[in-house]
Image (cartoon, rainbow, N blue to C red; front, side, top):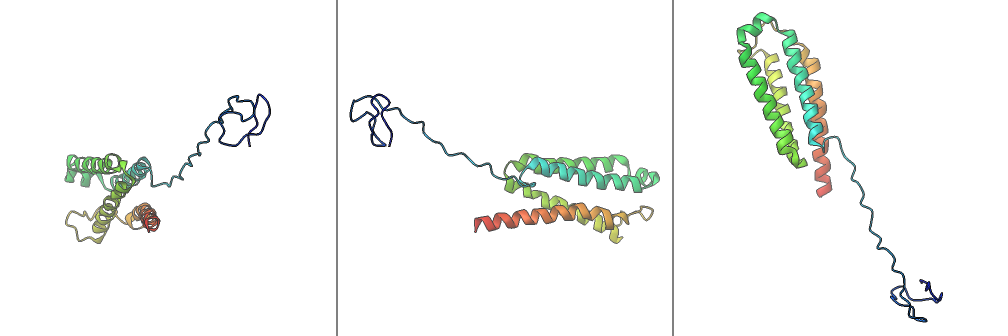
Length: 167
């Protein structure tokens, strides 16, 4: 119960004027609820997805160039390799940054990573005619698949969390 500032009389909570002296009652400021900031998961931000994908792909391409002899690279033609790499990064950028405005769309990173893993496993199998026998590809078994594996696990956990929240 508020008290009148002029005479000190008790008034009801919704009174605009004092019942005893008629003076205007002070109005209290409206209390606005504090908006809680939702916790941000690492894969909710498309910028973080783009950075992670860029580092993984850059590492894999770097290891390919590092472990492939210069004669083999020249025989393939550097323009083709650099062109394919540029298209690959441009596609990843478009999917993650441009289409990643909505969090659910940023999960389209999954097919890119799956393609990345498939390409390396295909190269390891030796069934691909473009696989050069002089290229040291054994690092792929141990190094290349690990970052993608962690990303895939995180993405599947994010999908599972979203599905459980909707249910």
